[in-house]
Image (tube, rainbow, N blue to C red; front, side, top):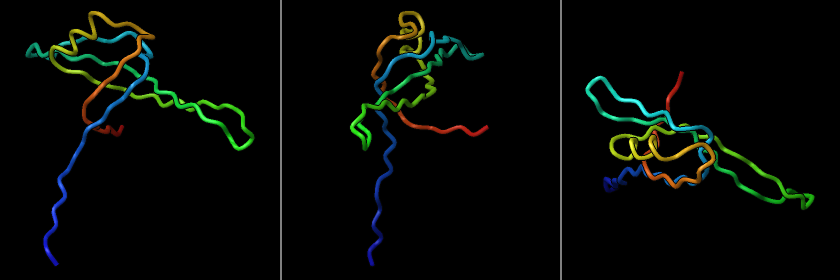
Length: 91
């Protein structure tokens, strides 16, 4: 049996709306970061043919120039398309 290696890939695209105004902050060494909440909704019909909505809420942290752009220009309710990597937190 050969040693088959599959490359790891962690890339995420998320489209939705901001659930709150962005929170722009800076680390102690001056690096900008921005925390936002994004709601992503999926519409479907249930087994009775009724339209349903399933919404997922995701907390996102942006870094660098994009963090400053979002923190200074976008507000709650604005549609966004985000690309990045997925990292989970447990608390």
